[in-house]
Image 1: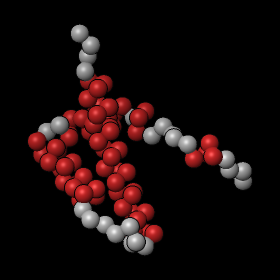
Image 2: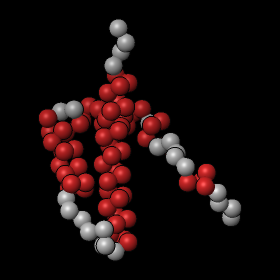
Image 3: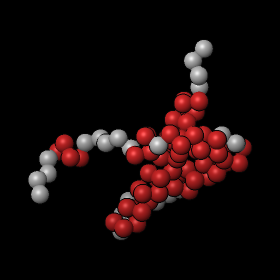
Image 4: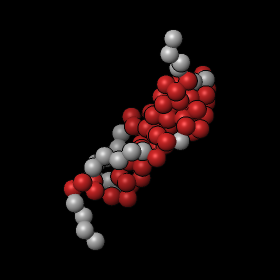
Length: 87
């Protein structure tokens, strides 16, 4: 198995090509309850204190949860952009 630094470069997120997911996220997370849910997820997974000395598995779980929340936010943004029609 050959690895190079380019293997670790930025990659396109799978959700970027999923316009249906983007549309659904935009519809759900722009409601009052959806905004509140997204804010609570962000608070729980980004803004709560966490020890950088925690075990690797705990850190990996936290990163995974943060990535999931961020993907929901990005899908919502993409869905909103797709629904904006130029005048």
